Image (cartoon, rainbow, N blue to C red; front, top):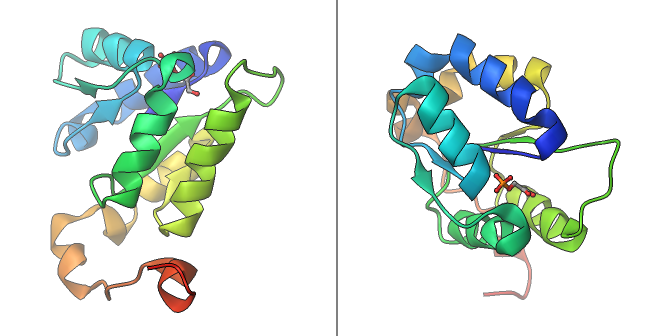
Length: 138
Ligand SMILES: O=C(CO)COP(=O)(O)O
């Protein structure tokens, strides 16, 4: 879970409304977002570095190694970030590795009500690694 500063309030509000469901998952977040989520939800959140300090890159690496299944990333559509290149890289890896990503509340609500979010669903998911597996990159 990640949110830029202008969208942290939105993410916290959404996460609070979905607290019980979220608590069933292992949560991981960039530094500041994770600290806020932990305080507001009272559930453990594993934290990587703050986004501008490398946190987005850490999450991207975890997507590539299969350690993140779903991403909720409320990024700011109104303000450029000093680490825009990291943001883009993170979103790119999410698509490359075919993980569901919600970037607004409407999509986050869709995701939370999807069978994809149920633990038993995983057994039926084919080993899909996106177009990476069909190209020359191994
Ligand atoms: O900048 C971020 C994502 O690009 C988020 O970082 P913080 O959660 O530390 O604010």
